[in-house]
Image 1: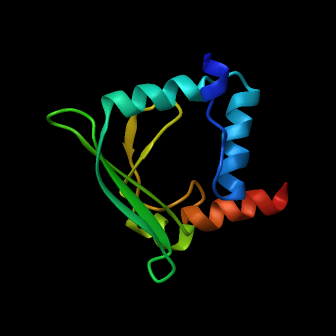
Image 2: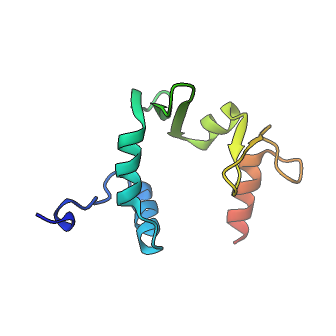
Length: 116
């Protein structure tokens, strides 16, 4: 049996599948990254999507000192909870929910997408 018999096939919500297919189409080795993440990270908690919370959460132990909490859900729920973000260089920076023009970050993103 070769590796092609065990390749990851994106599944899930249409948005998740589209993002994963985009990564594959742009040469990002998602199969290798999933295998590496599986071996390096220990999943401590999974809270499935709940329509009341409008989110889902997964907690990973990255090492003895680092826990990463990943949430996915409705922007109107997650943005107000956010205090930091990862920038394009994968560096943490403070996030206060305010966009460049003083509007809420969510309103700014929506306005930019509508303008496109």
